[in-house]
Amino acid sequence: MKKHNFSAGPCILPEEVLQQASKAVIDFNNDDLSLLEISHRSKPFVDVIENAKLLTLELLGLENKGYQVLFLHGGASTQFLMTAYNLLNKKAAYLNTGTWSDKAIKEAKLFGDLVEVASSKDKNFTYIPKNYNIPNDVDYFHCTSNNTIFGTQIKEFPTLGTPLICDMSSDIFSRQLDFSKFDLLYAGAQKNMGPAGTTVVVVKEEILGKVERTIPSMLNYKTHIGKESMFNTPAVFPIYVSMLTLEWLKDLGGISFIEKVNNKKADLLYKEIDRNPLFRGIVAKEDRSIMNATFSLIDESLTNRFDSLWKEARINGLNGHRSVGGYRASMYNALPLFSVQALVDTMQELERKA
Ligand SMILES: *Cc1c(COP(=O)(O)O)cnc(C)c1O
Image (tube, rainbow, N blue to C red; front, side, top):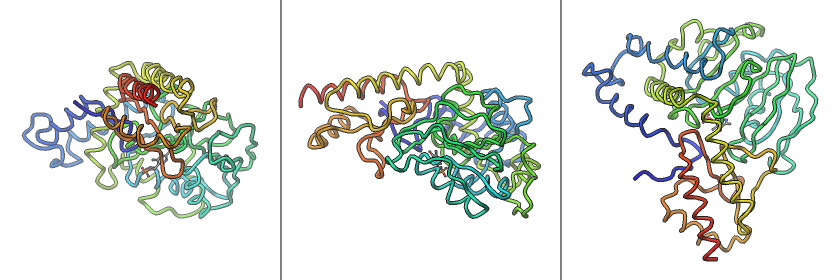
């Protein structure tokens, strides 16, 4: 039986997706060839990438609204610089809510003036700053919807007169939002969408083409839009597996369905963290992420005992990030409710035995 996989990324994928993907590695579409051996320009693969784009727009509710979907290389980390390269003329505003925002800010500084509108660094990123002002003379505002490492999540996004750009790597497709508020969003696939190796970018075409600098072809969104994500060889396998995962999500009932499941999982775990006298949550309650829950033992001398209990329960990937410590339970879309129940049972077992 498969382990309960709370890994933060790369992370759990649906069992049926893994089955279908492994079959395609040997024989894709019953054509006696592997998916990995066929041309990315052949019809069977073009159908895959087209379907992945359509599913992305459909699930996000962004069809016919002027958005383009790209599947690019280089991870979300390349988007930190690509967004600035393509959109930052003079000045941009950033909200700093953790390690990933910090990295995005560092890259963007290479291209213009940065206004850090607010930061939660003063309390090791354990909350989401609110009531900050965004200057209206900036080229765009950038934020990180879910802070994978610290376990905080933005619940409300500002309405702006300037483009809104968001790193949604760890919570895309997990909850309903008005996605049309965003002019560009991006996500490394390996958190809530597929395997590592491709990054989805959803961009409103009208915001492009406004910077004065020359942009190298590979880093220019317009290049990839013009060539339909085929300017160079796309990551065929990660795109295929992402497509399967999006199909799986659509068949389940889409984002509105999975959001209910995700809320149920998060409620179950956070209730136990708050109830169990041995544990405490790490971040501000109102900013808790439904994807990544961070918590710790109040008495650290119980660490070895708890660690062996959850390992015996066949739980994987529960250690917190080195910059936070404690534990982090990542509850991405494909994690079943019974895995969260297994973790809660383990926490209660520790309480009985401690
Ligand atoms: C993991 C992660 C990244 C980095 O993604 P890569 O694809 O490894 O570059 C960026 N932002 C967030 C929010 C993440 O969780």
